[in-house]
Length: 455
Image 1 (cartoon, rainbow, N blue to C red):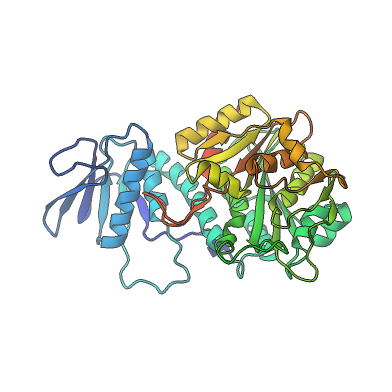
Image 2: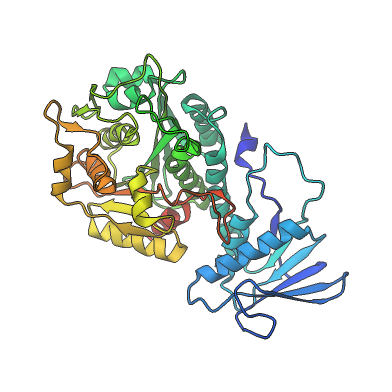
């Protein structure tokens, strides 16, 4: 099963000490008659030795180098040179390489193999930096690969199996709680979400001990392996792409993989809340009242507001059992977040100003950008229930904030916590300069950068 961790990009990217190959790319930030807009290329030389100069544009951000790397990757995929190398020139080599690695990825395991494939592309840069970028981008591309897998391949049970193998490969401790154990311990919310499916819920705990003793940063990931909406069933057009409702948990797995390979000082623990939300005669219903692991009762208004239910039990488990330094949850939680921020930023609700400042700075640096959501207590008014402690939906108005406040109601006073609503950033069917259409692995680079700078 170890082969599922070795994600094969469309072509290999390797380190080199000198420029060699039939094609040599030169990156420039100087405009010319032939190079007028970002991505323009000028070709010189012969068939045996072609020199391609690519213009990075005049955008005043580090992201122009990632975009340039992505454009080079796209050219290599379409032209299949027999050998090629990249001269970074004035570029930030690190960010150019990020664009190359992310741009080289594509989900093709179920397609017929192409008749011709590109040979390795070599990059001339510092070897230690190359190796670090490769670790981080391989982890992000694994998160993308697993997010793309359909529910016929990844469901709560098979995900738990993968997690156990994942733990063995990367030296983590793994605990899997099945639906019977969850029911016995009182985690009625996550159990209810999965009870309509033939594959019941799982909670998966993965622990990276760090190289320095201390309380762990706990990452809680939503893994709804398919979301039909349950009995509050989605429309025909709303149901495709719901395999991506597990992207939050896939990001957590990518972060853990990179943390372990980079040997980060800070201990990191992942809590994966896995369920499949399906309609059946066993499914939970609107008007049901669930008892969560915290003891708080939840009145169900919509079975399509299920992600917050599994996370509620995951957040409670983390606080009851893992003694966290702080908690971050990642979830494709609300369509309202997509309406608010599109595919540009994730929404972030946070109880700690210093924590948010660090995450925000990491997001600006990595282009995995976030924006702070208000957490006024007024939003809780919409979640008041006359028959339970709280209801799981406050309706469409302020939906991204009421969903965040639902989760906040399960956070203990004084616990530093950040909620990442990545519904708009976790996948994008239009793609971009260094992302093919589909999953992005959003959150991996942001969080690794933040963890590396955590004091």
